[in-house]
Each structure stands twice: as structure tokens, then as C-alpha cells.
Length: 315
Image (cartoon, rainbow, N blue to C red; front, side, top):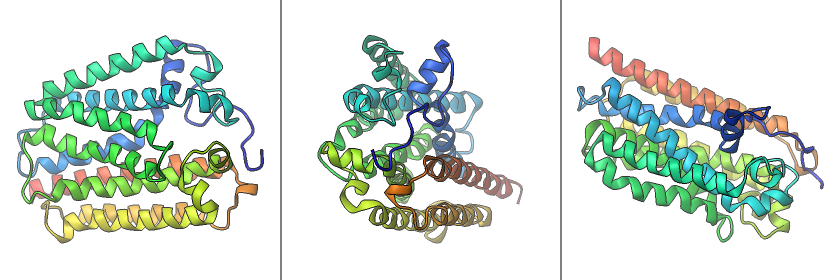
């Protein structure tokens, strides 16, 4: 298939037949590294108004809740997509289509993770506990969206956009004022994730088109998809800038520096893909743009947001 990567183990998966390697690869556990820091951003922002809300216990339950929710969402996605994954040269070696994991094993793991997520949310506070099933329904809903809408990228983005809002509520136990602070933060993460999901989907442009799956690359082609991804990332930078500009959170110059670092890293990610087309698509370039840049963006943004908060404490 033109543009398809050579069959082999996907990036951010683990070799070997151990229990850990199987389940960690099943949900691409290393991807937690670029999503979890944004939950940390939400928790840090909550401490401006609720400095006593972030304890070691709360931080532990936030990490458990986030990891369990992500495991549920990714595992459910693998179950729903198992037939398409078996047909796609890029994904046919995944745990379910390759037979390394049975469907029963997958369902047991997903249900256990969902139960753990709801339990962890209740350990945080009643508001998180009551909202947990809603969040879980949304992150699982994403798995069906490629069958009927190109907005699937945005649905996935909002699934991760829930993380900073949820972490904020875990620390604060209440919605902030002004009310639009958390929606702005969620929208920023949504645009950031959706842009990278479009880049990631370039690998499956022809497969999605041939099998009636909806994605921006399948609809607009490689260059059209990259333009949309650039616009989404520009929107993400603008939305991350707004909490500083509108004073929705009392953030300072270090936070703003985090937005600047994000803009620079995103610029270089897109520059590395300039002029690429499906016929010469190198999966390693996608991997660099998708995973390594994501880790750099999320980690640097979290660290600088934390530095900003620590500076405000001593000033």
C-alpha cells in the first residue's frame, strides 16, 4: 500500500511477552507522559485559590484516576477497532488482532480500569465522583466517531481536555470563578491534541479512505490535513495565552514563558513535516512530530506553570 509503513512493532510499545509489556503496549502507556502533565497544570492552577487542596494523597489519586481513565479509553478503543486494526498493515500486530491478548482479557482489563477510575474519583471528592461516569462515557464515545464524522479528532482532543479540568476540580472541589476559566483550558488542550491526532492520522490516510473511515487526512489529503493541524495548534497557543491575558487564573511570566516554549516546539514540529506527501511519508518523522514534541510541550508547560506558582508563593 502506497505510503504505508513497513509492518512491525509500533512506536512507544514494549518488546517481549511479559504481562507488563503486553498490557502497557495494549494502551501505549508511554503516551501518558504527554497527557498527564496537563492534569498537573490543572492541579497547580487550583492551588492559587485552594492552597491546601493539593496534598500528596490528592496527587496520588489524581495520577491513579488519570491513568485508569486513559487505560479505559485506549483499551475500549482497541476493542472497538480490532477488526479494522487486523486489516491495517500498521496496526495488525497490535495485541488483539495478533492474538497476543484475547478479547476476554481486554474486556476484563478495561472494566477493571473503569471501576478503578470511578473509585479514585470518589476518593478525591464528591464532585469528581459524580462527574466520573460522564467523563468515562465521553472518552469511550470517541472510539465510534471515526465511523461517522471527521470531528473525531476534536472528540479525542476534548477527551484529554477533561484532564486539567478534572484535576482542578480534584484539588478545589468546586468550579472556579470566572466560570469560563476551565472551558478555556479544556479547549486549549482539545486543539493541541486534535492537531497532533491529525498528524498521527496521516499514516492511515489511504486506509481510512478505502474503508470508509472519517478523518481529516482522508477528507482533505496530506497537505490539507497539515494546514488544519497548523490552525488547530495556532488556536491552542492562543487559548493557552488567554488565562494570562484575561486573568482567569493569577498566572505570571513563567506561565507565559511556557506558552512561548510551546509555540516554538510546535513550530519546529510542523517545519519538520513541511512538504511531506503520502507517497514519501516516513513513520519516523510522524513519530518525532507526534510523541517527542508532545512530551516536550506538555512537560515544559507543566514545569513552567509550577515554577510560576512557586515564584508567586515566595514573592
